[in-house]
Image 1 (cartoon, rainbow, N blue to C red):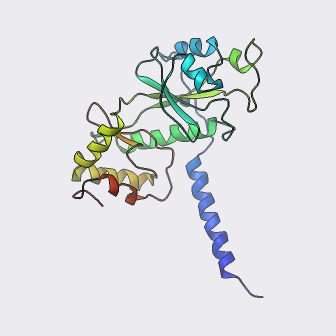
Image 2: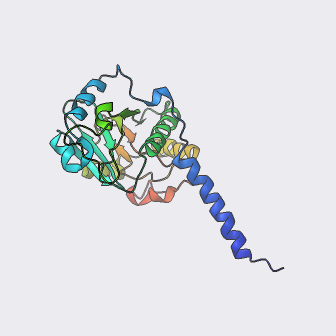
Image 3: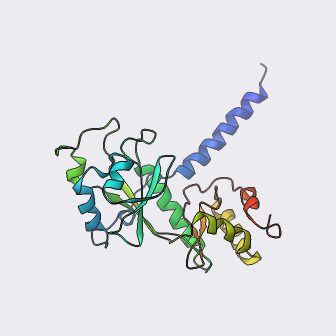
Length: 242
């Protein structure tokens, strides 16, 4: 019997990819500390905001509810701030985004990635990483029975991710800092973080300079994958390029 080596290689490649994908897209284990506690300072404020209208119906609904869109939608994810919750941001999908059926799974991945990153950088003073929690929308919103809360094609979102605001620099300043502010010590520590966590997508819009001078890992959802150091080089000065 003839054996097609190409098929064997393809099966092996798919197996490796699937193992990495499951590891990175995350365990669905949920712990109590993953959720925004009832006594958290923004919990009652968010309840009031989300009970006022169907906030996540669309981007327009978010804006109407007082949110300022900071970025996105990027693969459906919107980052937004609200004047009533200073020091915090939300990351969310809207009801009209149909590509993600269950937002809890990617949110759990972001929480786990953030925890892994914070543990890794705890002795690296030039880095920081936001804490993140799952906020569950109030029951009255999820019941979808109040006037004006019509069922959308995908239903109503149940969860929002609450994250600490790292007070990042604007895009132009951040790119300039990538060219001028990295030194050998920072790059050495960064290499350690990327290697130990097998981080992907370590690029300027995910590793951002902040107003306090530190550098924030704001997006760590893709971990335990093959690290890609080459993504860094184009943004660094010639002296610091890998």
